[in-house]
Structures are given as C-alpha cells and as structure tokens.
Length: 551
Image (cartoon, helix red, strand yellow):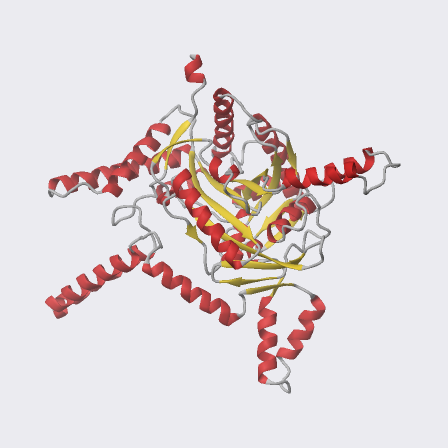
C-alpha cells in the first residue's frame, strides 16, 4: 500500500436511510402503514355497498393520513399529538416525578391512601407520591445486578418493561488517539474497531449490542491539589502568594476547559441460546456468571486489539457512579457508590427537561441540574461520506461549554441477514424507480437516496468481505443549571450538529426526558432489537439453539 493510501482517512457513506423498505414503499413504518391499510380495507368493504361515496371517503382519509404522518423538521403532526397526550397522561398519573424507594415511607403512604377516614385530597396526594416512588429512575427501569461484589466485574441484569432482558458490562477506555496523530494511525484504529464489531456480529457470538459513550465534563483538579498539598514545604504559610498563585493556576486552567471520558458498554441478550450455552458452565445463575467471566475476558481482549488504549472493566459500584454522575454532576464520576441497588436521585420532569435538585458540596447551596436529550437518527443525517472524526465538533467543540454526553448504540447483525435485507431493499428501490420512469414521473429523491445506500450496503456485504450489518442510533444529553441556560445550550447544540455534523434535525425526546436520560448512561438503553425477516427466523429455527451432539 502506498504512503498516500495509508495516510487517507477511512470514509463511509452515512445518513438518509431510515430503515428497511415497507410494503407501501420507502422506509416508513408504524402508524402510517397501519392507517393506510385500514383505509384500503374500508375501500374494499365499503365500495360494494355504498359505491362512490365510500371511494371518496377512503381517498380523503388516505390523504389525511399522509398529512398527519408527513415528516417535518419538527416531526409529524401525529408525533406531536402523541407527545402531548403522553405528557398529560404522565402528569395525571403522577409519574412525572421520581422519588427513591423507602420502605418506611412506602408503608406510611400506602396506609394513608387506603385510610377511609382521611380526606379525599390527602388520599389523592398519597397516591401520587406512591406513583412517584420507584426503586430505579426511569432511565434505568428494571435494572438489577447478576454480579455486584467488590473487585469483580459488575454485571447488570436488565428487564425493562416491554423489552427483552439482557446483561451488560461497562469498560473504560482511554481512546484511540493521543494528541496530534497522523492519518495512518487514525485509519488503522478505525479499521481495528470495525473488526472488533464485525467479530461480535457473527452468528456464534453471544454479544449483540455495543454502546460507545463519551462524557464531556470539566477537568478534575483534585489530583493536582493533592499533589500540591503533599509536595509543598510545610513551613510555608498557606496564605503565601506562591501557594495562592497555584490555586489561581488550577482555576484558570480548568475554566472553560473540557475533558472526555470514554466507556464501552457490551450487552448480551438473555435468549434461549445464552441460557443453553450457560448450562454447560454450571447450574442456574452460577453457570451464567461463569459464562460471563469468559465473555468479559473475550470482550476485553477485543477492545485492547481495537487500539482503544487502556481498557479496564468496571465494578458494579463504579458503574453506579457513572449513572449517579449522569443525574447529579456534583457526584464525582470516579467515586464508587455505596449501594449499586440504589442509583436514583430525586427528580421531576417538565415537557422538555429532566430536572434534578442537588447540593453543591463547596457552598452547601441547592442547585438544579436541567438535562435534555436528543436522538441522532440516520434518517435525519445528510447523506455523505464521513470519517471516524466526524463527531469531533460535538466532542471537543470550543464553542460548547456545557456538560454533555454523546452515546452511540450499535445493534450487530450477522452478515447473511444483513446481506439479504440489503438485496431486498435494493430490488424494491429499483422497482420503484422503474415504476416512476414508466409513468413519466420525476425521480423521487428519497428513493434515490435509499437506493444508493442499499447499493453501498450490498457492495460492503459481498461474499468474502468479512463485513457484517450494524443498526445504529445516537443520543446527546446536555446539562445546564437553569431553564434559560438549557434553552441557549439547546440552540447551540442544534447549530453545531447542523453546520458541523450534517444533522438536519435533532429529535428531542420531549415528554419523556427522564427515561431518555438513560440512553446516555452506560447501561445499554435506547436501541430496539433488529427484527429478523420471516426467512431469517425460519433459518434460526432450523439451526436450533445448539448442536447437542457436539461439545
């Protein structure tokens, strides 16, 4: 390979494609298809009985469906309506607030809510306080621990409502690049991480999801202050100008400066294959832990081979520190929590914010932390080639001075399934283009973009390429100390994402911001499991859970 080729950056086509093609064309899913199907059923059933009026009603209904589900830069009319209804329902039920679970308080409130002699308003207030009291915060709903001992990897056990259960383990990494590195180093690092993801997408792998998280926060000068306290001559008074000047240096160096902390969260779904493999390592949960011990070691070796710097697996108490820090930045990110089973901080929601009240340890004053989360989706990303440094403006942008966390979730898909989906999408896009040409219509821009993306995926997933599929979504959580500052930060984030990253629309997760905060905690929340096609499900059934005659 020539030096010029070695020094070029790895670029991949990203953006524009929302998902696999639907029956009605394009990549639309969900409510639009259901409502259009109902319009079609109404037309077929009503036309024989009512004739022309039934046809007119069906056509008008279909047009209304297209109008209310049309995507705009502020979402569709239906999306906005759903969010308003959800927010009203949450406030009515009292689940727009969160209070950490307390046994004594729970018993007292339960007794009051059932006391017939108490006033109606008192019983209603007690019921709302009971609804607000939960073991885990909304962002970590259904989270527990398979392994939470000291000096051993923390294995979180997740059973969120409406989702399949899974296990997760968090690794800290120092990153691939150190200062000014040549493009050849960045290229080899990007390829190494891609190989790590590809190796975990194989059908034999139990690891199925990877979350890459970067926390951008002010530097911690505690180590510098501790060094000064130990190293300074004890005979020098503390009010000496030289001593005071060192404190000024630390304050000046830390002002407007930001550092990045990186974590990799690996997730293993608890499915029939996992349970069957774990049975060979021991009975019950002991077998699960023994299997996870092997899986954790394998993932750690893979991350080291991916050139991610120093790699260390976190304990349950250390993982809990990241979750608590995400809610209350006053809690140091490196300070382990006392009880990994209690990770929630009292909070309440507004329509566009998740608000946590905390105490400043330096001044003793109460401070509100306002969090807001937005999703970065492929459909809202301008189509174009991007290198592995395309997020640099968001991670280290000099104009962004607020706390933020950037997290990308990867759902790994075996090559055979991803290849079949790419070919199926390509055939449907080509058919749609031919249909437009035959009818003399202008080519549809969405179809052209989708076809280009499908062609690239089909080429990348060719036989012998060693590539696999990857369904991804990104999230950004920003944190400020007031409503006004959060509003300004939201505008700044939108400008950086639009001008520097090519993100045409940030999908703010309004009406459920407390749950959305969990998408940027290192616990693997925020991405739906890719549903295989009917053909792939049949092949999985034929393959079985394991080969019973083999080792």
